[in-house]
Each structure stands twice: as C-alpha cells, then as structure tokens.
Amino acid sequence: SVLIIDFGSQVTQLIARRVRETGVFCEIVPFQKAEEGLERLKPKALILSGSPASALDENAPLVPDAILKSGLPTFAICFGQQALCHQLGGTVEAGHHGEFGRSQLRVEKPSEIFSNFWSVGSEHQVWMSHGDRVTALPEGFEVLAVSDNAPFAFIADEARKIYGVQFHPEVVHTPDGAKLLANFVHNVAGLKSDWSMAAYRAEMVQKIRDQVGDKKVICALSGGVDSSVAALLIHEAVGEQLTCILVDHGLMRKNEAAEVVAMFREHYNLHLIHVDAVDKFVGELEGVADPETKRKIIGRLFIETFEEEAAKLGGADFLGQGTLYPDVIESVSFSGGPSVTIKSHHNVGGLPERMNMQLVEPLRELFKDEVRTLGRELGLPDSFIGRHPFPGPGLAIRLPGGVTREKLDILREADAIYLDEIRKAGLYDVIWQAFAVLLPVQTVGVMGDGRTYEFVCALRAVTSVDGMTADFYQYDMNFLGKAATRIINEVRGINRVVYDVTSKPPGTIEWE
Ligand code: XMP
Image (cartoon, rainbow, N blue to C red; front, side, top):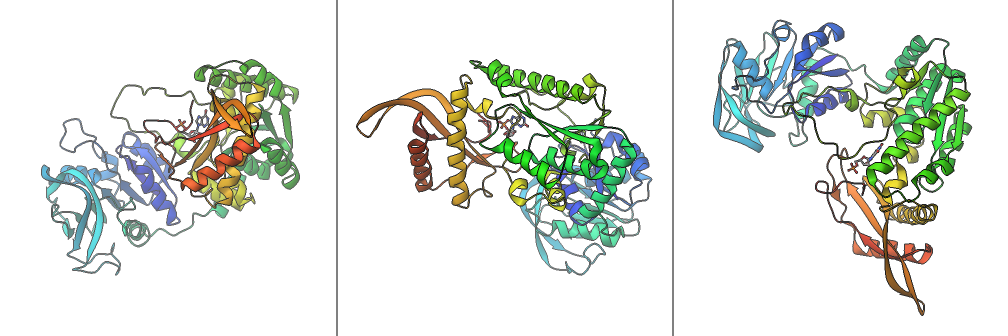
C-alpha cells in the first residue's frame, strides 16, 4: 500500500483517488500521525501532499523524522517537495515569481518515473500553485524537468527513489499527472494492482463475519446509496443476523419508500421492517416553519422511532452504518477555531452511544464513487446507484414556511413531474441534484376563464462534484417552459413556477 502524508492541501483526497485508480490501496494520515500510520499500514511507498503553509514559516509543519528515515520510495508534491528539500539541506526561497495555473514543463533528463512516456526535450502542461520555490538542491538530487519560473520543477534522487515536483500531478489540469503517479507506484515502488472491488467485497465480508460472530446487527436503511450498500454487504456476510429498519417519515419522494422496500425484500431477501411513522412525523412538524427546528424534530423523532423498533426486536449488539472515507479522514486545520454550523445535518450520529452498540462500518475506507462501484458489484441497478442525493430531513426542508400533509402531497407531485421531464430530456446524469421547492407564497393566475390564487413552485438544479460548491444548471428555456406547463396543468395548488439561479456559495443547495 501507499501512505499519503497530508500537510493540509485542499486536494489531498485527489492524490488518494489517483493512487487507488492504479489499483493500489492507500490511506491518508495527517502529518502529525505519520509515524503511527507507518507502523499500522507498513506501506511500500510514501507521498507527501501540498499545504497552504509555507516551508519558510517558523511554525510550518515538518516532514516527520520517521518519514525521512524510512528509506521508502517517496513522491513529494509542492509544499512536500519544499519541506523535504529544506530539511535535507537544500534551499527554499519565497518566490517573487510564484506560479499559479497552467505552466509548461520541459524534460531535461530521462528517469525511471518517466518510463519512456516523457522523453528528453518534450514539453508538458502541468498545474502549478506555489509562492515559494526550491533554489538549491540537497545532496544526491538532480533536476529532471524545469519550467520557466521553477528551475527545480521536477527533481529526484534516483538512488534513494525520492522524487519531488513543484506542480500538482493529482489535479486534472496536469493531463499526465495520473500517469506519473502510476509510474511512481508501479515502476519505482514496484507495487502491483491488487486493489479491486471484487477483492474488497470478499475481504470485507470476512472482516464483518470476524467482527460480528453470531451476534445481531441492525441497520437504518434510508434508501440512499451509502446505507443500502452497507446493508447489502453486511447481509452478504451475516445473512439472517441482520435486520434493517426503514423509518418512513412521509417526507420521501413519490413512491420512494415502496420501491426501496420492494427491492430489498424481493431481490435480496433481506429482513426489512418498514415502519410507518408518517403520522408521528407530520403531526409534530405541522405548522413548524423554522428550518433548524424542523431538522431537530426530524432527528429526534428518527432516533426515537428507531430505538422503539430496535427494542421490539430485543435489541442488537451492532449498528451497521454507511460511513464513508471522507467522513473519517482527520483533516489538518490551520484556522484553529471551530467552523460555523450552517445546517445541522440529520444522521444517526449519537445512536450507538445511546443504545450501547458497537459500529459496523464496512465503507469507512471508500470514496463515494467506489461505493457506487461496490453497489454495482453487489447487483444494485444503475438507476438506483445513480440517483441524485436526497437529504435526511427530506421534503420537509423543501417546504419553507411550515409543513402540512397537503403541501407535502403537492410538492411530491410537482417534484415527480420535474424529475420525469429531466429524465426524458436525458439530463438526469448531467445534473448533480434537481428538485422542486414549494413556496409559502400564493399568487394570482388565470386558468380557463377563472381566477386562481395558488402556490408558487421553485425549481432547482445544480452541477457539483461534492456538494460543497455548486453552480446552478443552465437549462434551455424551452425545457423549463415545458416542465412548468406540465406542473401547472397537472398539479392542483400550483399556478406559477420559477427557476432558482443561485450558485453555492452564496446560496446552499437546499433552501433550508
Ligand atoms: P446544502 O443545502 O448544505 O446541501 O448545500 C449540500 C448537500 O447535502 C444534502 N443535505 C443533507 N444530506 N442530511 C443529509 O444526509 C441532511 O440533513 C442534509 N441537508 C442537506 C443536500 O441535499 C445536498 O446534496
């Protein structure tokens, strides 16, 4: 495996993606925990990430001693390169000619890491983002490639198998970056591609069996991809010992709960309890307008309902969860203070402590797209795996101004028509997330010969990579016109449709 030492770069996770794409397992550890990571993982190669810090700062992170002494093949990126040079006896200076963005790299020497795909004299586009730069090399190092502003853009000590680059090979703007990292992993470090989803599945099934033994496991199934894949994997491992609980809060999309229940019971023969808690949830939410209050009510009721059902089963020793790798990576923070809570996310956090259960988290090492691959491996249909994200509090946070049963029904119909049109236009997979919002505003309209006074429906569609930032989707106006006409004609209670053209930031994706 490969150990990635994180110095706090925004794109460290991309390094891990690139390494895993080569078929080699890797993990990220914050630089403070490098030694522990070395002992636990016993990696065959190391990659040092970039950082927002400057290697010249007095309290800049240092490359841990254990790393310097490990003797392992090492690939150091940007800050990693500078810190390494600095500590090995080279010189780093604050650059008056920092480089940000595209840059041309010119190869000056052949190297094992180029393995015949970059030849001497050839030029390649790379992505730079640095203020400081290396100005004198430590002993044993030589220059492999240069750029206009970085005479030490690509350096190496081939004997010790240490490589350093000033650019970022992990980003897509360095077109050959993935190939360079693959060459490092395969040719330099000699690692074989043995990380595959089929192998992971088998390995995890065995691990779950070892952990759970003959004890009972329960899972909360939401119908989302993560909880579904986790449940299927646990089911494959321990079969009848697993019971899944779907808390139906009446805030799901049209037909969603029924479809999820049918799929898991019929295709997978999985023991699934469908709890109809619609009255309880909608009853308590009735008339509640404040977004955070809604979220808190839903979170509390969810836990209560889940606990009640679990008690009926006589409890369980383990709670299965679809926690993903990005949720467990410890991030390196330079800002110090706590970040502001924009929205309190609804999840099952807190349940295991309250119910005194141990966790089974078979997806803890995976990224979202890897979970999708695993889902396919487990036989989940593409239509299910490719579904847009859906928030835990469901339609309740798409009804500004107060939840009622009637409004939920109106919203559900409008949303279904909107998504149907998106699918028909072939846009579903291009858009990251799309949904309807029902506004608490009534406007005057005219239909037939009569006056109407009904609600406004807002449509939202965004493109995004991870939900952290998003752009509103630029529809063809004809599409919007068509969707609006259908919604107004087919849904009683809506007589006007508007489109949300806000990106994130400053807006959030959901309205509440
Ligand atoms: P925002 O609205 O914060 O949403 O831009 C970013 C992404 O997160 C989803 N979201 C949630 N997901 N529980 C979830 O599981 C929640 O409470 C929740 N709130 C928002 C949202 O749909 C979008 O994909």
